[in-house]
Image (tube, rainbow, N blue to C red; front, side, top):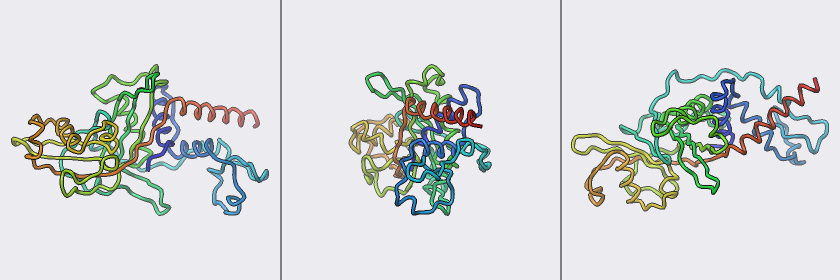
Length: 293
């Protein structure tokens, strides 16, 4: 499942690119994010030995137990194997994406899971929104993939692609950062729907493909889209077909033979302000450690 640390990593990747500096890796961001948000240790927690103090929260119960130093958290992490190219890229308004062909073998496998149970790879989407002073969210870029991606490389790649290469928008600039919100959706549980209406609003995303007048069409909506727009199932399908390029009468949608795959994925978001507070804390921790040395 997506986490706010994933969103923080997307912000880190974007700002590092804009500032032309090296960015933190996903493991580093996750470790620092967990440390920043850690609750004080309880007596029960202390009774359970931990193999590593990498993510240990600040010491509040046992004065002799020290949290991992920021310098250790920022130590170079092992290189991550990644694909040499990004595949099945899709861009979409409000999480909408054009998609062609049936679900591939890699996308039907919802994720790759390590022996420890942590998700290492997944199909994913990264969405950038602009948040107005009144709290209204406006899409600023959204691109993702149905091919399972190792998260360190995949989130970074699509954070930048959705920020700079969504052809519906100009590339995101530094001055826009304070208005941005990042949302990450990791896609899981791909399965064929028994009928076009065999899915639940707010639970399932849809990937459709169909042929009309000898032309092939395809598109997708992320799980949150229908609920956010207040659409019925039929309205969602018609809108999705329109997005794919279908121009028939809306009442004729049932005459089209749709291939529908449903999937799941909970969207998690993070505002720039929250990310900036965390990033400032990281910098302060580094400065404090340097002064102590």
